Image (cartoon, rainbow, N blue to C red; front, side, top):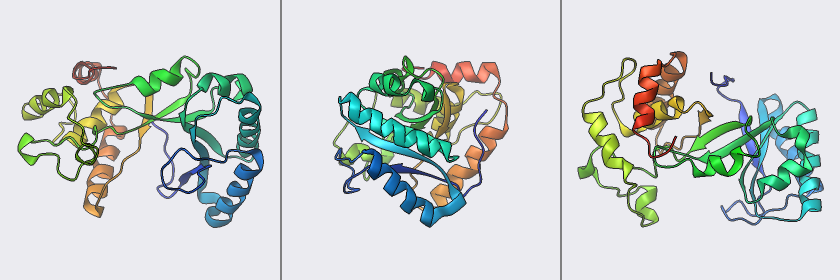
Length: 239
């Protein structure tokens, strides 16, 4: 089953020094609690959880400080999480009591589960949330190209699994919901992967958001049968 919350609840990331997407962070105990107070002052009870993003440190003492701050946040009723952590073993060592509490954001799709495997041996019972499920903007039709997609901007080629997914979309054979697009197929695959508990989506337009949320609502309300789950997992390069 997937976590259900109010549609306006927020899970905020903390620690970035400039909010420009780089790895520069300040994850000290004082910095995290200061940011947390500011965020609570803006969002009040709509704040559902907080997470740190990017942590390349190998300093056990500094990581322990970060864990202490997040433990305080959890004690205040918030969920806690992280993403982009280079040394998850040090997180476990510093806070074994939080091992099952983490919400961990991972890049996962039909093409890869490497990010989740990076954490899973340390945190097998964490809540894993996937982003990048559409593989950087792979299109339903090859004639559509990748113009404007994340793949195009980073000058990357499509993953090998893309054509396999297109072939399936031309003749889907599921017993339940039938996907009409690569985005809908990606959502179904995410639900088929029982280790995942949700997805992060990045629509460009209001209509894309409405379409995504509408299909996601249908997917998560239905119980996927084992036959459909096996078909969807069989499309993936990794499960």
